[in-house]
Length: 97
Image (cartoon, rainbow, N blue to C red; front, top):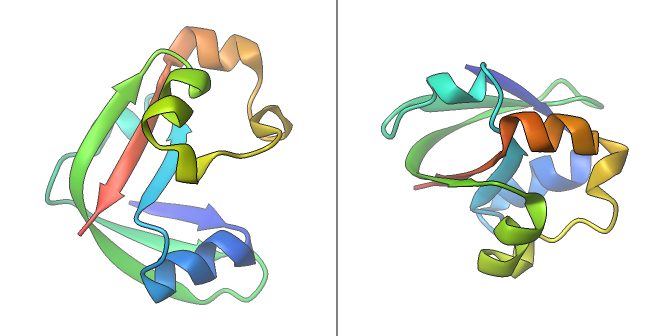
């Protein structure tokens, strides 16, 4: 599976500082299993890295997820996702090895 990232989170994953990626728990993300390898691609540079999925954490809302993983807090997560999508799909925190 391929996922696109802006340069800042891409570089943080690449360095090992960021160990969790948060997304909507939509149809695409429901296919992810522990042990899968995700290819992350920088939107700006086209560079790629691969990370193995160590764990999956599903939540009803971003608020719930940020309570468990405060280091992943995004000031305005709704610039990327609508509240309607959040309500319909829930959210997932994908943890890497």
